[in-house]
Length: 402
Image (tube, rainbow, N blue to C red; front, top):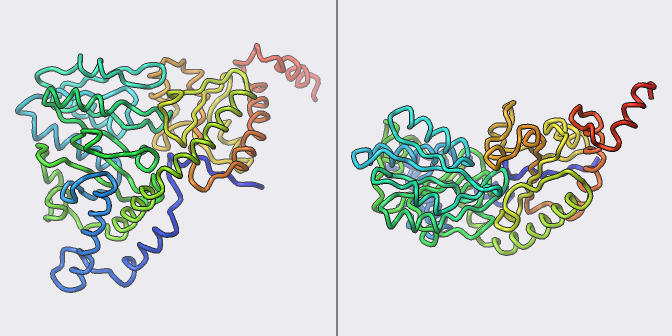
């Protein structure tokens, strides 16, 4: 049976060149980078070289790069750090209804600590209106956190415009760029953000390592955890050296191949979207039609339950998702899809297909061959599908024992 992996937004396979770069730091170069002897010094040199590579990839200064355990920690550090350091100035934080839970739940938690929270709505494509951001800013606003691109529907947010508005009002901006890095051009000066989050396993690096970019001059509370002086007191604890080396190598590779991969994945994505929309009825393409990630296509199928669809596809060797991997165990419909104005029933029929550099046109062809039969079968089984033409014929067969 053919196997197709269409879930790169959940995680990507690690690049073999990344494994090769990491291996010596799992074996030969095992020293603690905080040690003063030669074992530690040679590892410290490698960590700082990795920091320079990551900084180059996003147009930052190496001193603005902090290594973390991943996107969730980086988001938490960014938001808490600004909130706690600037609470004497104000207590108002602005975010959007479609943020990853690492952002949304962090902001909501601060709301329970006395911070004033504004969660902005989005349009039917999941996009934040910069005018809404401007209208929400008060003299107490200290932080705006809006993701660069959505992890479920792929919509690219107008972060540059939002950051310009914020800068004029003296407000810090954080963006979660976990899904966008390696898929669209990303430069911190061009975006104008103060803080930015990355996670290695979203761009063919190892799991368990990420980046928090903090622009020079940003008032950010250090030592959110208590311990040693690692990462310039920003993130205490012994560094994950193999992970850091792997992250930097992965960042170097995707940056060098960005345009080529973007063109290739856009072609596959568009073929996938056209194939689904042309051959299946009662389906909604979610996310912005043009301002979307090159590798992500997301749909909602009427009269279908998402998990049944995923199981059916998995039986055919196709790996996909019905939204964020972080919420796959939840019985509630996606908060992102609900924010678009979809009903519970339609939101439960979601399917996210996220492509990667190793996918082929044959993978797309296979998926488009398999999907119609899966949709038809599940719709005929659905109690919601009374107006599906095949339903009465199917039920008659059931009654007759066919």
